Image 1: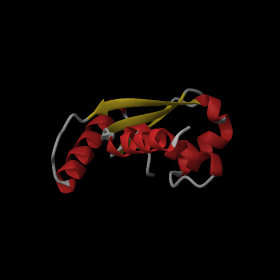
Image 2 (image 1 turned 180 degrees about the vertical axis):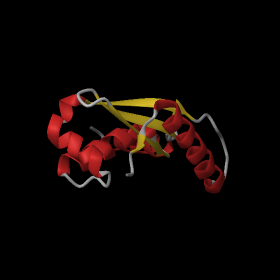
Image 3 (image 1 turned 120 degrees about the vertical axis):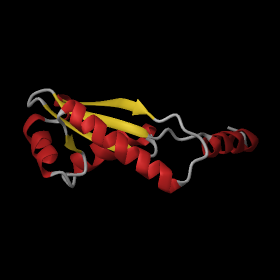
Length: 114
């Protein structure tokens, strides 16, 4: 691949917008659900599943379910994307926490972070 094309791909990657929102992780075998927030939903699943694979996730109940049922028993899904623009990090954090509380109540779910 020529250098100019590599630079274009790198620039496009850096300029892409992240999508903040709420995600959920379901364990089909146990019926448990955990809900979490992310400033970048595109990378949330990779982050959570990597921690679970390494046995180092902070949520001990989720880690135990992973150990008992394996990766095949887990499903990641986006519950809500926050369509917001140009807000301060403080406001974004506040909105994410409010929506997390809503989804935890709605789904009767635990928190991804434990």
